[in-house]
Each structure stands twice: as structure tokens, then as C-alpha cells.
Length: 455
Image (cartoon, rainbow, N blue to C red; front, side):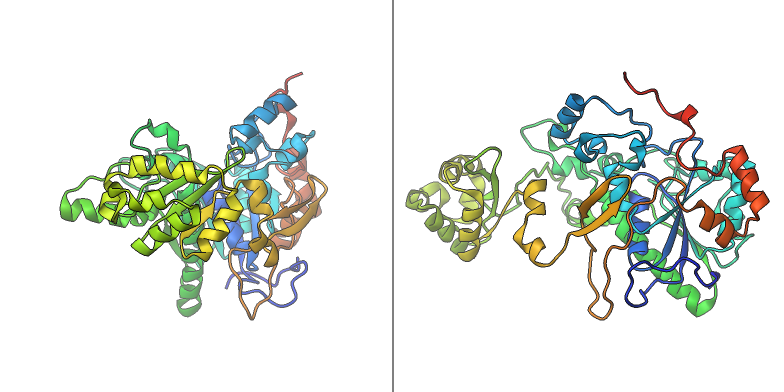
């Protein structure tokens, strides 16, 4: 292990966490990379975000997104554009400290300011790397190469370093330097196509970022494996996680169907290859829906009984699964007439009690009020000066012998400069003052780089 005894204790920890004593440099953007370090920080690693204050990392703190008038923000929220979802729809003066995505994934982390694209910032970064076990980055490869912080260059300062790199398509090949968000990656590998609807354009399926979530989990898993390997051998290493290749195995059955049967799958929408009914159906109220999956004849009989629909049982078009699947469009229309008058939560509980696979489509408000999540204490409260006190999604998993919970809110930009520069890196007071004078060290962004706000 390369780290020294930590100077900053874990706040609120009742006993050592599994990754306590591991220090990680975080040079991540958007979600996939930050999700890796979120998971590692939650289980005790000291994660130090290295962030420039003289340029903006896009789609990370949201500093490049000009705050809009309240009416515009309300419209954006209705369209699902949550990057603008400031608490109470109030951006505040330092709106980059109130980004919903950042405040969610940056909890339990620290923040130092350094621009690694400059000689001064790079040297500070190298000195930090000497004190780290791991570095995580998910930038386009040419950015890391231009910055001069490839694994080969960093290991000269720390031979035992573990480096996780998470490019969209890999560190080599013709797509190496293609820039992509998770939704672009999923489009390239076919996930968006499979999610689409047979009777609509691809855009009707909307954006999802499943690939980011999966990359976060697999990246954290890969880092812990590398730490285990280093503990046994003393060797650090580079980990390459191509986000496209990481997601493709999730589509394994579709790939196998094509390679074995030469069958190219059509868009799936809410359909199933054999189950019917298998869709979402309207319930009473505004935009209330229930998902139903009929996987057997017993389930079909139970659905008709709960809905009071004996006519569907007697309909010759629906007498067995193959016929229902063949006639699923008309079946969906018929079934919707029976679900439409029903209250969604009551129908959900009735269908579950009857042994039917079913569940309500929950919006954010209903998910936050979900009795199952509340009974387990999933949501946890964090407070910060920047955004106030709010409930946050809790830990992804629990360990019976290791009590754990969220400890600290997301850091403000440069909040931990004093600790990182002086206690971890070893800057003298004079060195620290000099870096402040040049703008490397500071709280908040340099006002000159921020977009003008509308009057």
C-alpha cells in the first residue's frame, strides 16, 4: 500500500470500513466514472476529486449550463431535463454547487482544485499520485495523453499505482477518440434499437443511461480486484474498461440469437418474446400505469379474475399463450378497458396477491414515498450549506457485520484544498500561497470562464 495514515477521519463511521486507508484520485466526468468513485467512497476509500477552476468539466457540476428563469426550469423539469433541477428550482449564485446529479454521486468525496492541463497543475497532480493507491478517469483517451498523465507516465511517480481507464470504446482501435455519453454508446451497440417500439421512431424510447450505471459497478469491482491483486503481489496495474464492451454482454441473448439462428431481433418496446399479455396498462388518474407480465396459464386466469373479465377468458383469440402473443395488440386494447377504472396501487397489490407478476410505474414522488423503501430506511438525510437538508438514495448494498451509511454531502469546488495540498501532498505555506496567486487553488470557478447569466 502506498498511502500514509489518513489525516482526515471518516465522519460518523462506527467501525472501520472495508476500503478505509485506500486513497483514490478522481479525474472523472458526467456519471460512469463518478459512479465508480461514489461506490468506493461509500465503503471507506478517501476519494479526492481533482477539478480545474479555470475550465469547466462538461455535464459534471453543470457550470456550463446557464441557469434559466423559473418558468423555463419548470418546463425543463416536465421534460425530464434534471440537470437543471436545482433545489426549489433556485440556482443560486453558485449554481454549480446545486447540480442534482453531482450532489448525488459526489457524496463522501473531497475536492481539490488543479488544472492538470498546465505544468503547475500537473506537478501538483503528480505529487498527489505519489500518495494515492488508485486513479480513476473516464475521459476520451486523447485528453489524458495531451495532459501527460497516462499510466506509463504516472507509474514513474508511483510504481504501485492502480489506474482505471474507462473510455467509451477502448484505448485503441478506430473509435478510440470518439467522444460519447452513455446514451451514444448504447445507440452504437444496439440497446436503444432493442428498447424501441415497433410502431414509433427510435426517439420515442427516450434516453437512458444504463451503460453508465453498469460501468460504475463493474469499474468499482475491477478496482477492488486490482487492490486484492496488489496486496498479494505488490504490483499495480492499468485496468481498461471499454464502456461499450462492458455493456454488450448484457445483450447476450440477442447476440446469441443472431450468431446461432441468424435472427435479427426487432425493437422490443414493452413486449416479451413469448409472454402475453406483457405491457403497461392505464389506470385511473393522471398518467398512472401498471406493468403486467403473464408468464403462465394460471397467471392469465388470475389476471382475468382480479379484473373481473370472464369474457377475456372465453375469447378464442386468447385461449393459450401462443394465441395471446399472436393477438397481443388487440389483447392490450381489451385489457386496458379493464385496468383503466382501477386505482394503480390497489390493483398492484391484488395482482401480487393472486400470484401475478405486476407492479406500478412509479414517478419520483411515489418512489420516495414507497413503503418498502421507507420501511428499510433506504433514503438517508444529508445537509450542506450549498443545498440545505434533503433525503438521498442510500447505499447499493448492506453488509451485516459492517454498519455503514452516508457520511458527508458533496464537496464544494476546492473545499478540501488546505487538507489535500498541505496534509497529503506536503505543500509549504509559501507554495500554497503561490498556487493561490496563479489561480490553481481557489474556491469556486474563475468568474471569467462562466457563461453570462440572463438578466
